[in-house]
Image (cartoon, rainbow, N blue to C red):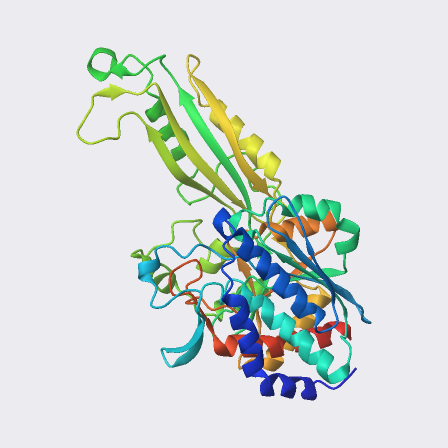
Amino acid sequence: MPELAPVLDHLDKSLDQSLERLFTLLRLKSISTDPAFADECRKAAEWLVEDLRSIGFEASVRDTQGHPMVVAHHDGDGPHILFYGHYDVQPVDPLDLWDADPFAPALAERDGHKVICGRGSADDKGQLMTFVEACRAYKAVHGKLPCKVTILFEGEEESGSPSLKPFLEANAEELKADFALVCDTGMWDRATPAISTALRGLVGEEVTVKAANRDLHSGEFGGAAANPIRILARILADIHDENGRVTIPGFYDGVEETPSQILKSWETLGLTPEKFLGPIGLSEPAGEKGRSILELVWARPTAEFNGISGGYTGKGFKTVIAAEASAKVSFRLVHSQDPDKIRAAFREFVKARIPTDCSVEFAKHGGSPAIQLAYDSPFLSKAQAALTDEWPNPAVMTAMGGSIPIVGDFQKMLGMESLLVGFGLPDDRVHSPNEKYDLASFHKGQRSWVRILDALAK
């Protein structure tokens, strides 16, 4: 394999130039959810294409029903990887909470660290450019890349990715690779890199219990007429037992125990209930008893109530028995839990508790399976070793309590596993005013991708 040291030295010496390229991209107002910025989204896609072409990629803007995709290819030996990122950004409102123009990127100092300020600096323009800069440096020094690389940059991630699945379906053969690299994640802390090995899946349900054919006077009908709020409250209360476990039959089918060595590694991260819950004004974990905080949010399934409505909720008081009551319920899934089976089991659980003269209706609000990377994956171990060589602390294998739909799409539609590596920090203020990206993360992220590409090629 070509030597790494000259490539890393090149990155060190060209940091100012790579920073200016990032600033050029950050100045483009690629807000995908607002049609007023459609031209800016296209400009961002076109800029990325030209930049990728400048380092030898065959790159093009691909039109969709919404904002365009950027697709680029570069030949190379070794495994074929697909790198994914997104160039669109969140709206900047409320603008008056920003310290400076969100689209006038600049360096600043925050808590003793130099940071890149501006919308998209961390999510996800700064992240995706770490990979582009790594490829640029490798090409500059050795004239080629150590792997065959395909790049996919999306322009609608921040607005629900409506064009993504049709695009993947139409271009599946072109985009298939040995595995995918996804950069839209973060580190454990500024000295400890992380690889996310799991993402929880999601099932969303809305349930409406109906009783009388109209709202009723609680004095005239109270005690005789069924109250859908009481029925619904009882059903929701039945979903958890006194130990925090979900009582829906079959709910834990497909749930595996996390390997003991992984649990021990999570213990070394030192996250206590007080540290996790204290900043939000809480102190005691509310999930399954006997599980650590990280196991609860990374490796266990949940049932949560996201909204409930029924009867009179305005100012003052109204003595009414509502005709109906509704709740929005979400389930976070892990391992091989089946979203369709979870949805069906929930509905049967509810139906079994509806009085004979009442009825229930359901509305589906999305569903996706969990993603779990094999802990013994050779890609995982190589990337972990490469990251450990770059950062002060060894890389840790973490998980994510939320979902990244693209990872499931890659698995289901392209047959690829994904390696989730990113260099964001918990205080980057993504989606918020005064978004920032640590300058060291931007620089060392570039170096990290060089090491990862080299390690994967061996």
